[in-house]
Structures are given as structure tokens and as C-alpha cells.
Length: 140
Image (cartoon, rainbow, N blue to C red; front, side, top):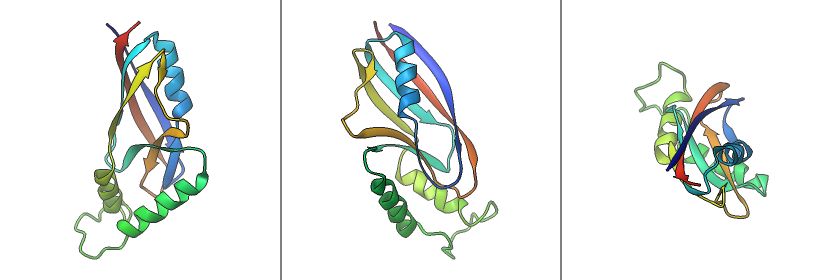
């Protein structure tokens, strides 16, 4: 059984989806694992991880619009407001999505569909430096 672990740093410029599929593919390729499971985990509570279409940027626009309508800023009943108007909505959006995803690995590559990409979904308005831990376990 082989294992590999690394942390990818993703610098965001505010709300939105940041694709990092290529970095994941490079990590898996360098790990010398033919078949296994890759786990990705983001070490923050106001962003999340998604596997989503990467062929049409309108998908990202529509996802941003959906979450802005589903969890808008300025809800007057929120109690946690000390970190800004976007903070608690960001926590709610992260709770509705996911902070960890698993991706199968076969023939030394992540098994993704034709139009699937791996994204960090930043829910805060200001720039952040986000850490995503990659852990791969499998056989050669």
C-alpha cells in the first residue's frame, strides 16, 4: 500500500470558484499510485470544495447567483456578525456544500468525467490564502 500527502495553497481574490484540477492531477501523477482513493480536504470553514463542470463559465456564474439568492448577506436574524456581513453566510454556504471530497484513482490518474473539474469555492468577499490537503492511498 502506497500513501502520499501534500497541501496545496490556493490564493483567492474574493467570492467564486477556483479550479485546481491540474494541481490535483500533478500530485496524483507524482505519487506513483496506479489504483486508489484520493481524499481532498479544505482546512477552513468559510469555503468549500466542489466537483463541477469546467467547460462553460456560465455554470460558475449561475452557481454564484444561486448561492447569493439562497444565502444572501444582510439577513438581520444572524448573530455571528463580528467578522463582517459576508462571514456567517459563508459558513452557511460551506455547510450546504462540502469540505472534503473523495476521487477514485485508476491507471495513475483521478477518475473524472469529461467536463468535471475540481474547485475551491470561496464564499468570502476578500482575498484569502486557502489550504487544501491531498491524501492518496492505493497500490502501484
